Amino acid sequence: MAVIAPKKLLRFKGACSSAEDFCEGSRFKRLIEDTNEKLAAADKVRKVILCSGQVYFDLEARREAEKKHDIAILRVESLCPFPFKEIVS
Image (cartoon, rainbow, N blue to C red; front, side, top):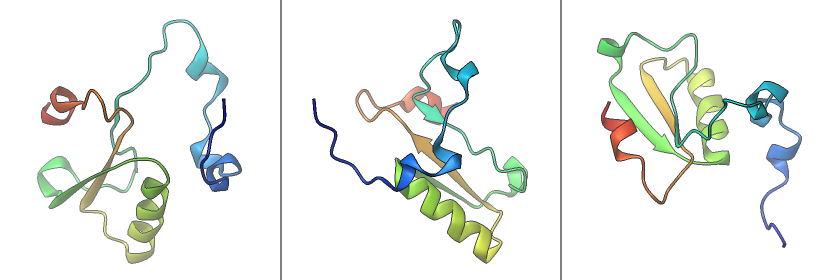
């Protein structure tokens, strides 16, 4: 098997999983919600961005640089089947 992908995330600490993420009882997340502590309250969020992969980290860096904490960034980890239910809830 060959994986062709940028190597940027292999060295990026934010893209690493902890050992607990692989323990029994853990599950694959089809959608990862925004975990930024500075994110505005849900009723104050004016935009939601859905993205995948390395794009998330680029958007997060830009959001921090511009101090726009009223924009939520959701990571879609499973494109097929698409996580419609998780996004709506």
